[in-house]
Amino acid sequence: MLTTVAYVLAAALCLMVLFIGVRFLTQPIPAAAGYGVPARPDGDRAYLTIKGVRDFTFGVVGLTLLAFSTSGATALFMATVSLAPFGDTLVVLRNGGTKAAAFGIHFTTAVVVLVSAALLLAV
Image (cartoon, rainbow, N blue to C red; front, side, top):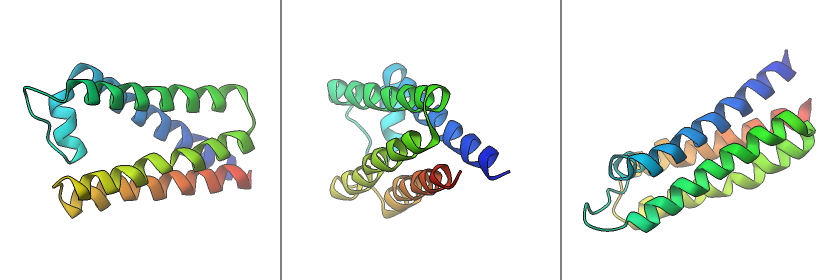
């Protein structure tokens, strides 16, 4: 049962971040608003694309590890990649975003990713 929960949670997180990456690549302005720091309609495209590529890559690497590697390797990846949403928390707070977005979206995501890593280490 624990193994199923660990793998399903990790896969769901990887799929979600993959979706976020695709959204930043295809709908950058609405994606930025959902991130917590709205982008200027006439600028910021390169940075929004960078975020999309980053998130898409994290999702693909995570799914690849889940499919072809050990739970321990995937757990270390998840623990390491949790730095991104922790960093996103600071980005939102430093750039005029709300505390609700910073902590409700990004900090909570980082904690859930760390829980996922712990579950993967436990199986």
